[in-house]
Amino acid sequence: MPIRVSFTVVLIVVVFGNRTSSCIMADEKPNVLLILADDLGYEDLGFQGSTEIRSPNLDRIAADGIRFTDGHVTASVCSPSRAGLMAGRYQQRFGHEANVPPPPHGMDLDEITLGQKLQKAGYRTGIIGKWHLGDLDTQYPTSRGFDYFFGLREGSRSYFYNAGKDDKPGNRHGIEENGKQVRFDGYLTDVIGDQAVRFIQQDSDKPFFLFLSFTAPHGPLQATADDIERFNQFKDPKRRTYAAMVWAMDRAIGRVLAQLDARGVTDNTLIWFLSDNGGATGNASSNLPLAGHKGIKFEGGIRVPFILQWKKKFPVARRYAPMVSSFDIFPTCVAAAGGDVASARPLDGVNLLPFLTGEDKSVPHTKLYWHKLWFSAMREGPWKLIYVQDYGYALYNLDDDPTERHDVAKTNPDRVTTMTADLNRWKSELAEPQWREADQWFKIHSQNHIRIIEAKDGR
Image (tube, rainbow, N blue to C red; front, side, top):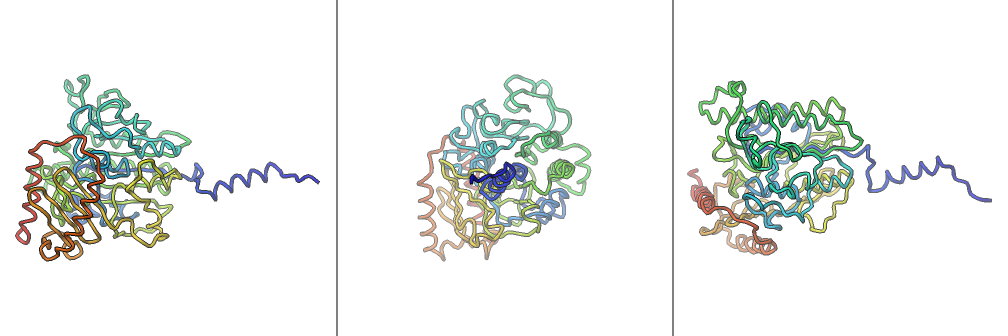
């Protein structure tokens, strides 16, 4: 007799078959919210130990999430750090070592961005805030994996609208919405937060990926009078304004979190927070207890506040001590979305999920590397090697010396030799830089590296 299978049975088999595969059903896919601060000091948040600068909303994410205490970015300045984040690879592999100069330069168009990967996985994608990966239309966010863009192409601008300047055609520092310059009212950090809320509010049958890319607290140092008034305890007016800028960013993030709560999607949203690099010397930030600052290879330039919250997957908050890098965000998000992590250009980042669940008992990285034109660094476990052109090598053991006070290169010559060979091997794999920076930056950063190395206990 012929075998009869009802439509209902077939449907059940199809549905449950898909659920047991590597695919993730659309209604199960998590939203992704990637929040990036700009030039934020390592200690300048409540959950990082600050008693001076309040950040209740970021503290809430940290209290409910996973804090990566050895979390790094791939560069100590803005544009290359963002390139590594968006590509999931060392940006030096495609020649993006320094900040993007004026057009036509920008991020290599052959690189696949996180936005493109999540678009392909069925996501509605948006970036609100700073781009800084190229000014040309071919480099524009809506050509690079984002359905929606509200923000600035360049690296910084005034936090207030300047009529007569901002509305000039072709203004590279203007605020745009999908290619058209727009006027904004009020304080830019608040405006960025409001736009993020609107993006989340939009009805869609797709999950969303929002790259919330603040300019704060990057210079110029500007804040509202009311926010500055909150920090009158600071005698230094620059520190007072900087603290107000961080406060405004946290307030904007609070409105975004409230919108996630209102829509009932908080638990199934991957929320990332980190800074693009360490605090800068000019914005009154503090990277303590780390040595160094934006632009150099000491920990204060490359180790940043770094959080992941995904309550549905990780309901218990904790700290995670092994090394991770910002380029791990790419494969982690794509894997969580059920997308294809494989790439024609192999990723350097790794999917963190198996490590965080305990499925993988090893660590994401035993080694990490940094390089920018005249300066290089490498981590191998607790060991940190720094190279400065025209100076040489310094070595630190971060387990014993997390503030990098004591150069132990002379007492560990074999380790210096082996790590130098490994660092040079990695550098041999890199592309030629697509552009360079002015010699003045080399001189400034070289002097800063050497000053910290030689200061030792006197710092």
